[in-house]
Amino acid sequence: MAETIQRSSPGSSAGWEYRVQTIGGIFGTKDENIEATLNEWGEDGWEAINVYTPEGSGKVTIVAKRPLSDRVRRQRSIP
Image (cartoon, rainbow, N blue to C red; front, side):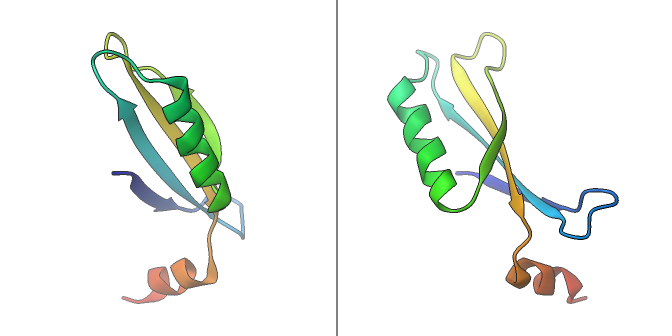
């Protein structure tokens, strides 16, 4: 399951929301799984900004961002 982190970039009026997900297992991560995840996220407007392998894990962690939507911006403004 992906974790979505919502933060604004300093000095940016648009702001961003961030998403982080680690995929794969101890035996590695198939390129097809990475590609499928990136394509799925891209269709939803996410842009990968970092992809890395935690040392010795065989897994891949993907970090992505997209501009804040009006819906998310409204949710943030509710106390």
